[in-house]
Length: 497
Ligand code: SAM
Ligand code: SF4
Image (cartoon, rainbow, N blue to C red; front, side, top):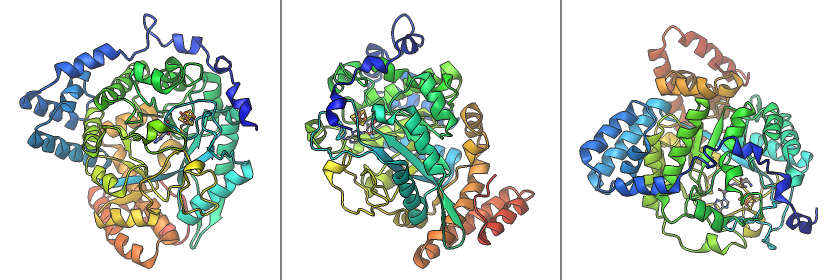
């Protein structure tokens, strides 16, 4: 497709006004900038006793109120901050134990009708060498991701373009799911695909839902209306704040009950505003559907082709980033937290103790990068530059050294443990039982199929200690677990509870 066809695109062909307005109250969306700014202002210099009360509420796995999150965001005292990070770690352990779930993004198309000022895929960027994968190329990517690296969870990522609408997304998911690769001792395949795409209409969301998605992820980028308008030109689809902020309401109405929120840190000078925005969004979804977000993502802006904004130095420091992650963990304790390979290995590893739950690895974000076995990043062939080049095997080894098990579990959505069901299970700690067992079963598969002798040596003590913990905690159920574990050792695959 010729790139000129993109710039003539009419946003009104996509945006359905009635599918925005029905979610507004008194003609407004639910993000009240003045309220957020005022709440942050009033929370300055918080009383330590009040902070400790808030931490107790977080530990009880309750979603915080905006004024409580604002107070945590305004803590500057190092000792109090240390108490916050310690509590965030305890919550992570309580809800998600010592697991990190792993996945990898599959970038499917870099064609985009939008002109986001921070993104290499912007239609305004003539330097980007654009590609949209064919169904055969998508299968080749899936083969490499699952056959070479051993991934079972994929995040499919698309620019916004008529070429890659809902039908294309559904077909691409079917192409990925159709791939199965023979491994050393069994087979490997992608078992859960999350989607990061543009906001869709309810009818289009139904098409994507029926194709079998895990999480539907759309980042608001910035919750601040003014910054949003500065970053997204008005005559584009993405320039419509209302279409984006209401997309998760539409997702719920289309039957998708597993959604992921995020912001792009670095766009809005006041990063605290963005954390507040995510909290308010989570609370609004809880109000609307009874189900909060499944994940928060905290991407930070990195250098992108053709984007001056992305290459300017911004004031959002590593310390701010760690504070933001801590406050999110404390504010919505049951929600998964994703820190991607945009960040360096060092910073990501620091985030683990603060409560992150998902990390990608062996990450390629150039279109077709896995099957082409590219190892060098080229700024004009990808959306932005990555900071953590670790392979999945390296990351698994690093985690194992810290006693952390890497999980490839995809059982949740295939067993119907999604939406309200998983929220309740996470809040009460019940989901932990299934997750712990499924982490062991899927980790065993990966170790047998993909680990080198050195990695095996690092990981066997971790898996053995997990098995022992399961035996001690669930003695009656343990024989069932052991039966499936042994069947996996004999080459059976994809056994889960
Ligand atoms: N086109 C869809 C959209 O915008 O919603 C799909 C997402 S885009 C391919 C994935 C995400 O990458 C965006 O939502 C944005 O947060 C992030 N992103 C864009 N430019 C970035 C940059 N320069 N550095 C880091 N992340 C960036
Ligand atoms: Fe397109 Fe998404 Fe990039 Fe914006 S962030 S230019 S919508 S791919």
